[in-house]
Image (cartoon, rainbow, N blue to C red; front, side, top):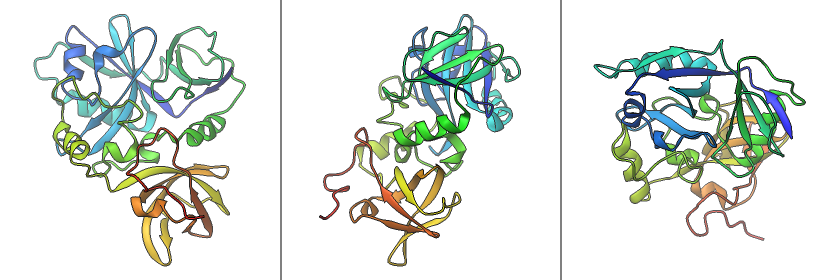
Length: 276
């Protein structure tokens, strides 16, 4: 088992009798599926269906804990509070009370709240504890692990009020419920799926050369086909047009990118076929 403390993650606490119903009408996944075994990955969308934030939701007693990008926690509390109205819920930033860890490999034997990461069988676990736990890896090590699996990391890989969930793998990575009923932004998400409107995907890439900065254009033959998102140690994620996956290496700054769509990613037939 490998464990890393993730200091850039924070926690939003949601309490009150209406906490499940309140979040159920706002986020992309089924809040009721959160239990003592697994977390639920979900996103908050704009009314137009664009990504605003995502988090791993953990149920604990009379509270729901949202493990989110720490930099986004104050805004996430503020955004959610706008919809509270008469609901019996309270929201607050609990980042000082919970420390977020990622564990992968063997199941962790740790104190605190241990929940399986639902996105991928090899993603591992999230562990929330009142104090930092003993770790044998760094947040950077976890970054390399999740990049290898093709897991997006919030605002490092998505753009607020621009990104569409299905571009970032929320369907295949179990971040959307198609059966729970209405939530904010559902219409665009459903239309994107059932009309096959996904034209770009966030794809793992192998980086040959210096790691490009986020936002660096990706080109082929001088034509822009996407842009770089997060990366580390020769691995990265890039938002690419579908046709960019068919013909091998791409240019990005001073580096070459080799798209490596993972086995979990559903692509149109022939989209990732590379000529011999």
